[in-house]
View 1 (cartoon, rainbow, N blue to C red):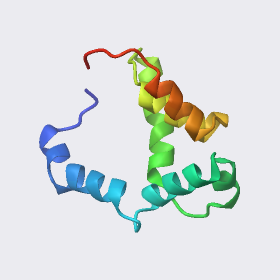
View 2 (cartoon, rainbow, N blue to C red):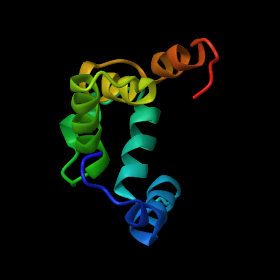
View 3 (cartoon, rainbow, N blue to C red):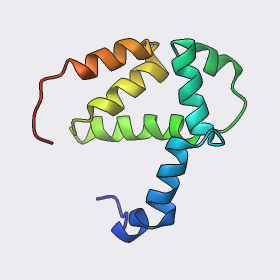
Length: 104
């Protein structure tokens, strides 16, 4: 929709990067999420992090674009709330799990 190409996503730059980002302890994104979960919030992350964690900033952009375009993105909304609004990760997970089931 914004100029992205399917072949880019389906290649190593897309899916490959996503898999490594989500599963490797060498990934700054993975470690940031892991630490935020352990600390039960993002406060310590914002106070102490000195590294570039792309996913944290990407979340904000995606959240803002989805809002602007009226696109429902419940997971992004909850991640944003944890990162930028001080919501506890456990509360975000509970709110996601309490949603009504529906086709996606």
